[in-house]
Length: 276
Ligand code: PAF
Image (cartoon, rainbow, N blue to C red; front, side, top):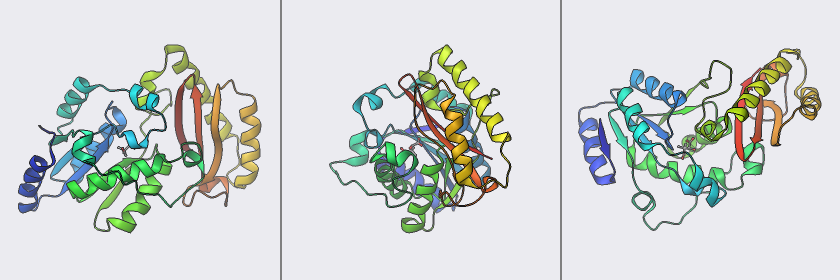
């Protein structure tokens, strides 16, 4: 596996691939890799001749300096993980290399003022700004994202439709631990007790979802979701609601919906979504 830190070096390898007409799959990450990333890499390896993974903790998408500074970083493990998963190139640039002195922040216009965008103002502006840089440097054929960050996935889908028409977005279902909770880099920040509480909460959600009739309209399901949340021992939550899976509206029935939530365990913010 090649570990590359500068753009010019990366581009000379990529142009050699392109000259050979190799298809390139790209998996963008912020490191602290886990099984969820592993599935994205696996899918990219199935679909392409070469797979490139980037590790870049993007300061522009964090709302607080503290959250940025305490974001899990696991360099040695990540290198081994990429080697074990047979990644061809690991691109790990510095912030200067990516942004130079460019302070431009792109403004996301899609799926605004709902879910995470309502509670983490500017977060998705930071996400599309950094992806714009990476997409234009790497020029891959395909790019891979997980369904766990579902609103992010929908926003990136639109962004690609608008600006990178020849790039194919491939979405991969959320990977879950045996106990049901999704793999997430932020799980590393939970204590044992917090992890157990989170697992218990997840089981209750599953039972709650099973108790709903598929033909129920989303608005009624959301009244029930409110009642359900009143009974839970959660430190704080930003949202817990059903939305239509396609346009993230409140229109439709439970069978067309996902349950989206963002909850806190101590200081750790956890998000997930479950197809009903
Ligand atoms: O999902 C993530 O890890 C990040 O938001 C991404 C897409 C790598 C952009 O920094």
